[in-house]
Amino acid sequence: MRRAEGKEIGDSGGNMTNSGGAKQRWQELYEATSAETDREKVTELINRTEEALMARTQELAHDADDHADERNAMVQASENLLTIKTEKLSYPPIEMK
Image (cartoon, rainbow, N blue to C red; front, top):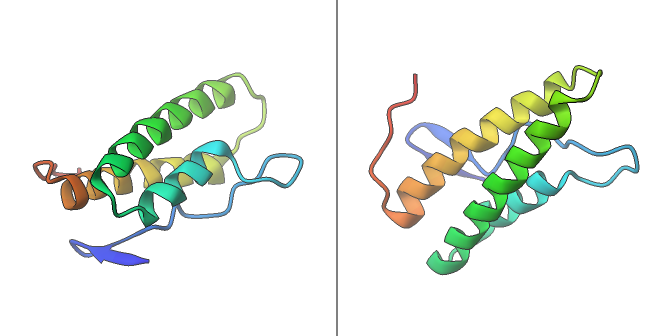
């Protein structure tokens, strides 16, 4: 895990699994993104991670269960993706509120 601007990146806040015990796709992609050092691969992984996060958000919107832990982990992963974009891809910093 690395620290960036006072935050630790590389931790999505938990190990979310589906009913079969496997990690959610967004989390697998997020972990790969956090570990990747090649700029081109990071860009592709960020895009795929963001797509997976959106897809999972839509799935959870139609689920009667709360999934609060996963939702919180998804928010943390999204914030960490911004840090990764800033550090690894030289995006301009974004103020978090």
